[in-house]
Length: 319
Image (cartoon, rainbow, N blue to C red):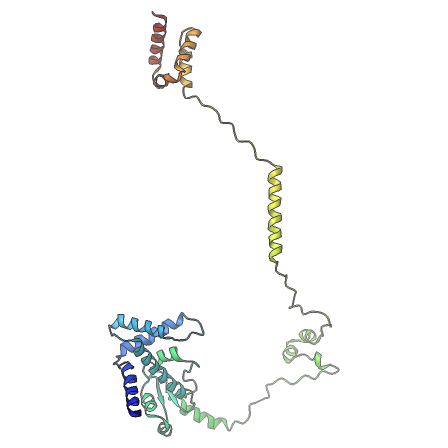
C-alpha cells in the first residue's frame, strides 16, 4: 500500500511540472533585457513575483510567438541568476584572471579540480550575456576589479620584487612637528592650520566661551501654525469688508432714452405748415397702431415725407 501511494505521488508531481523548451540566443537576450528595463522603473526594495514573470512571458509570446508559460520563464530566469552567482564568486577571488574584452575568466588547474561540473563548464569559456547578468543580478557590483588582468599580472609580480629592495617610504619630505609651549591640549592648532599662517593658528587655538552657541547653529524661524495662518486670513478679509462698506459703490448709470424717430420729427418740424398742423401730424404718427407708417416715413426721403404730410392735411380738412 505504501509503495502504491508513493508511486502515485511521484506521477502527480511529474505531471504538474512544466515541460522544458529550447531557448535561442535572441530570445534569451530579449528576456534579460526586458527584466533590466522593467526593474529600472521600480523602487529600491522591489521583489520579483509571479505576475512579473507572467508579463515577461506575454512580451516573449508577442515578440517571438513562442507559447511560453510563466513557469518556463521563471525557470529560465533562475538559471541565469544561478549562473551569475557562480561568475560573481569567481570574480571576487583575487587569484583569478579576467579578460574584460572577451568576458572570460582564467582559473588555475588546481582550482578547476575543486569546481563542480556546471561551474567548470561555465567558467572555462567566454561568459555569455555577462553584461546583462551583471546589470540584472549584481548585488555587490562585481566587475572583476579583484581579479588580475591577464596582460598586467606578470608586471605586477616583477614590480613587487623590486619594491622590496627600496625599503620604507621616504619621510624626509614630511613637515616637522610643531612644539608649542604653554598650550593646553584643547587649544592646540591642527597641522593644517599651522601651515597656513599665524592668523589661522590663532583662530584655531582660540576657545569659544561657555554658554555661547556655534555661529553655524543659528536659530531657525519657527514655522507658522495653522491657527496663525487662519487668523491672518480672517483679519485680511475683515479689513477688505470694512473698506467696501465705508466706500459704497457708485450708483448705476441712468439709462438714456433714445428715440429712433427723432430725425423724422425734425423733418416734420421743418415743413412750412402751421404749428397746429405739426402737432396734429405728430399725434397721429405717435399712436401705437401707426408704427408701420412711422417706420416707412423715417426711412423715406424728404420729398416723400412732405407729400404724405400735405396729403394727410388735405384729407383731414376735406380739401
